[in-house]
Length: 363
Image: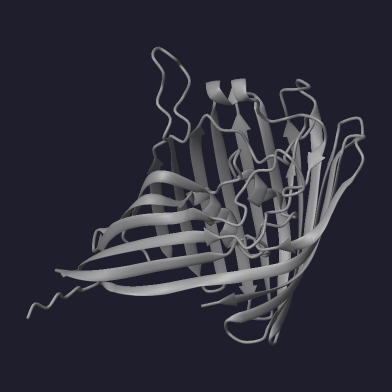
């Protein structure tokens, strides 16, 4: 009799599923307001199903892996276009994003030990990790945080494909240093001077002690624009300009936890492409109230674009978050966010508002 045996490294299945009733309204320039009401599933970082594992190789070295899929139960909601007004995602022709599908959120393999750790594959950018650590909205995909929008690329992605990430060993208590190098998929064609889309480098330095935490991070990325809703009129970038210049993003975050009574956080983010730039700062406070918590964050910024030369637009955003934990795995929430852009002459360039009620279960 023949027996076949299969052995696996220690592995964990994990994930979360989030569904919310959401109402969006957006107005660009003098176009009529677009609205959409419905169910969405990306307000707490997105639905995910993942597998992660670890194997002890001996001599203090471990092999590890992570594969994480995005599982969308509904369309994403909003994208904004300078040409012809605003399209609410899922509401018409030209919509982009994952619709009732599966996407690759993260997928990497690595080694760790006394030398630190190295991971190879699709991973979060260090500028995202830095901004996310100080975003009181939990890095959720809801309007209201300018720094979180600045660190996204033109496809609204905060992950980098084909990345090698190295985490140095922690030689000082509370100090973490990470360095990443990503490689794009697109080749250069012949003698073209266009940079390879997706090629880039990023790093972060973080320090935590007691209730204090601080992080600085930076990324240089080839041939990419910025988040679509940053700069509808005075766009920071254009396809021609982003092909000729690197997008350089920097983030600084600070927070302090006041003996469990409240947490205050500050984030500053800036992206530069050639002579265009967009920058913002945000300040927020979060207060725990037993099983509930309430948080408010406000952001201001400005944008210098190419479409109108040196003209600067003013940016404002805010978000209100109410959470209530039904258990350690089940969360109900209310979120309200807004984003506005006004030209230097004071005219409306963009107004977005989002309100959502939802429930999320993690496993």
